[in-house]
Image 1 (cartoon, rainbow, N blue to C red):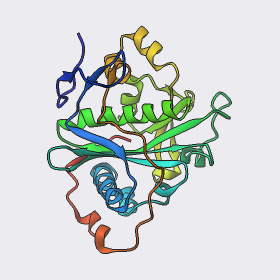
Image 2: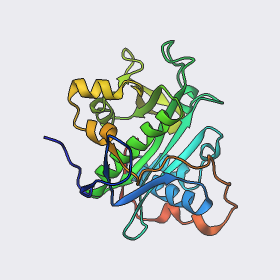
Image 3: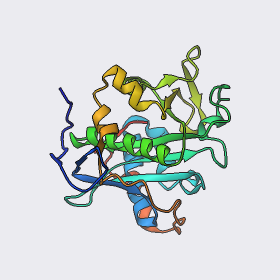
Length: 255
């Protein structure tokens, strides 16, 4: 039986991608390309981290330098109903500089020299809709990799979040090591895991993965990974000064 996520609207047959079902979502996912949207992503990010790692979250009250990198984009999920931010994630490729995870570990030979992308700062709404927002953000990452000829996606997960990546068929980059402290997440121990983008449909078909249809056989026009890269750095203002004082129980840290 096909698994359907809570909050997903019924499929509609419309102009889309030949051979795929078109399905509308109650939210949109797009790339951040302006200051106001970046602050929305920062507020979600900070609140999600503050629930679980409050000490590290103090560093996330403002946009990070990594948000402006030539190889980085930030995704923002927003409710169609009221425009409220529901989730965010950042993708960084190694096309021009090493991944952030490489500040802490040397990648093995089977990943070295390949086009890679790392997803980080993934946080979503803590309510029921958050589950489908998280799945859609992960699909946005896969789509971005496919459209930019990225062969492997890297993610890092602390316990117990690492189990979610196992369920998505990520594999350990360092199976003998386990959890390693990572500099770009406050030296908190994480598992470094990798996902083969090129074989997702074949692997998930063989495994009868419950997300196969959502990721591979369905077109979601509300997930848009196109657009220009990068944002204009915001000027110092009061806009983000109260981020740390906002309630932090609405958003959930995923990675």
